[in-house]
Amino acid sequence: MSAVFRLTIATPMSLGWYKPEVLDRWFYIRPPSVKGLWRWWARAFVAGVMYEMGCLAGRSGKDVLLVPTSREAEAVSRVVGTVMGLGYAGEKAAMASKFALDIRVLREPSIDRTKGKVRVREYWADVHRFAYLTRKKPPIEYAVGGDFELEVSGGGPPQALEVLLVALTLEGLGKGGRKGLGSIDVTAVYRFRLARDLKQLVEDVRGWLRRWISPCSGKRPPFPPMPAVAEGVAEIYRVEGLNFSHLHDFFLRSHRARVLKGNYAIPDELRERLLAWVLGLPRKEEKTETGYGIKGDVKRRASTFIVSFHNNHVTGRGGYLTVIRSADWPTALEWTGGGDQQINIDFEKVSEAYDTALSEFREYVEKLGGSMSRLWP
Image (cartoon, rainbow, N blue to C red):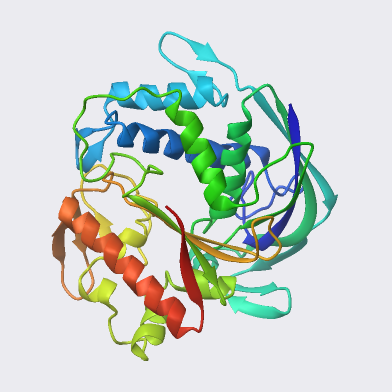
């Protein structure tokens, strides 16, 4: 079985190579990065079905609200590796990936170096993520456009290819890939018939996984101990009427405040209630954008409040918001703006943070003249 995905880089992509600020001129869209994104979403799909079936309860972790037990983590890896065919290395068995990836560059993308300002199609945009990463550092390279073929060959199940299409739809590659940067348009799929409806793709994968995962008798916590595509904790929205920079700028406090409050100096609700950590916590050694510091041994926590944007995608043009509520957050943070303050995180606080972020995002989209609709569930 093989499939060919025709790709183009929809929004500025900075995908580091031997140096984090340098693009890989052989591939641009690097196969290991695609494989990593694919595996992350495969794990989320497997975890979602396990959570719904009572097989993913987790345990209290050191400095973390919930983490999967070793048995649960092993079960997720085993299904991803052996059932989906993405490769497995367990304690007692191993299996190589059933898929091989090959990227062909058909047309070179536009390349530039920046410390924050980028050109996309007919307009210039300020990208705060790039500006943040280049403070006191050299400019970083980014790419837009181009024409590529991603060939996936091997003997794995077709549902794994559906997961790949979902992954490339909902999340970008490289720096800021969860904040609207590095989004990849899948403009066509050859040699294999895939649904073009995102909701159908998600339900096809979940229905297929239910045939491989048996129900358990475990108690289900309010949120799973890892990101999971499960009803009640995950939602996917379509956003129309905005461009990628609008979506990306939501993660910048001053821009959110200017849109929501009319003044960048007035705190928005996420800032006022000290909940903006839900938009992501950087590595401990980095100076944070939000003023939140991680206490304990947790190194970082990427956001599962994910946006992407597409210009010419098989599922349609526009933006996507994916919200995945999970309990793998540090139990304690420190707010360092305007006086130190400790923030204790529990299930109620996690729920409040995600609900507030989603409410603010909806209002933000509407005030900019856009609209959003729920796609799944």
